[in-house]
Amino acid sequence: MAGNGSNNGSGDFLTALREQRPLRNLVILAALTVIVVIAAIMAVSGAQRSVATDFEPKPLFAGLADNLDKVQSIEYTFSRGLQGTDKIVITRKGDGVWRLPSRNGYPADTKLVKKALLGLSEMEAYEPRTANKKWHRNLGLLAPEDLGSAIRVSLKGADGKSMASLLVGHVPDRTVDAGGQGVIYVRRDGEDQTWLARGRLPLFKKVNAWLAPDFLGLDKKDIKSMTLWSGTDHPVVLNRETPETEHFSIANLPEGRVSRGGPVLDGVATALAGVQFDDVLKADQLNFPDTSPVVTLTTYDGLKLTLVMSGAGSGLWAKIDVATTEDAAAMDRAKALRTRVDGWAYKMPSKVTTQVTQTMDLLTRANTALDDEVRGVMDSAGRPGGQSGE
Figure 1 (cartoon, rainbow, N blue to C red):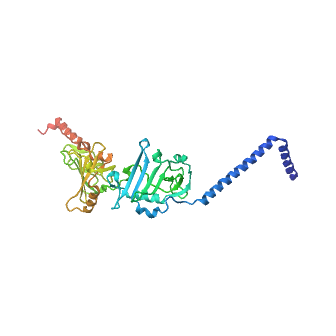
Figure 2: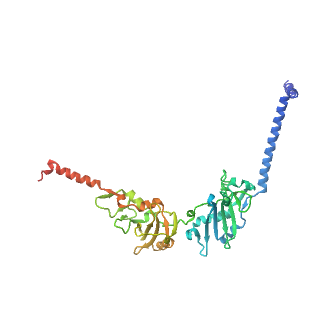
Figure 3: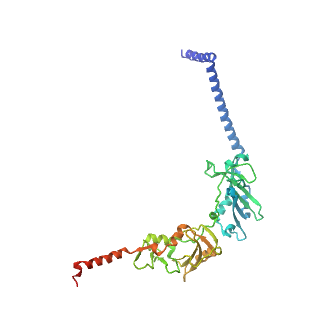
């Protein structure tokens, strides 16, 4: 009985298809849709298998890793819009030190230089993208000379010829590959073919970011004393007896005044600990008048630093003299620091210049406790009981 019912149901459906044209068209359309979807899935799967089979990730610059010792300059070129292009150049000469010509040859950050060299030599073409240059702008790969946002990273040899040159564009929404490595859109300079590349590069557009960060090398626990406005009639001398002393104090505290507290003095006295500079120039390019603020600092191992300031407000530059006290343990340290800073002027961060130009009036206040004591004595003297000893 059930079998007959099933056959009757199939027959009724087929009869309905023959007799009802709209229903027949709907079924045909549904069948075609299923066929198209299956075909699309098969096509995409086939294309993915083809890419996976036909393309293997490979270095964008084969052999570059074996020739990094021949690189003599690194150049970053980027657009400044209607103002044209700008360039950061980092070079090395016979001494092997990477330097920034735009900063009179001041040493570059060796860690960043290494990242740039290795980053370019290890950059891999991970997946091919468009070769239609009309789409370069969409990927951030339009050249900087064409008002594009791409950054050109170039390595050159001693003869000035390019060893590798890459245009770096946008970071895609998928910022890492399956293995967790960074990906970015790139194309080799002079080629239209673009790539989703695997690797990382430092892409700083400010020269200051490439300066060697090594500076004074001071730790808070090193600092024994600091004198603000040294050599003037109104110096402020901050010191502490030992590294274990909890807070700095004012050694030349004026009569009738008290400090604004140990934490306030500590912030001033240790302002140069761990500090990084904002920019650098040759010291002879600046004028340091006799009225310039002067700061002296000593450490427990006998290092003595004198900072002479130039400029105004938050834009202060400092040239630094390095010396040692007698029988100092810091001779080697002083020699290394002197080699680093001699002849240079450093632009100090605004938060540092604000601290090291504090005055006695700003770091102290009137001793109101003394005033209260005087008033108490006077009040006692004015009472009837206060005259009983006459």
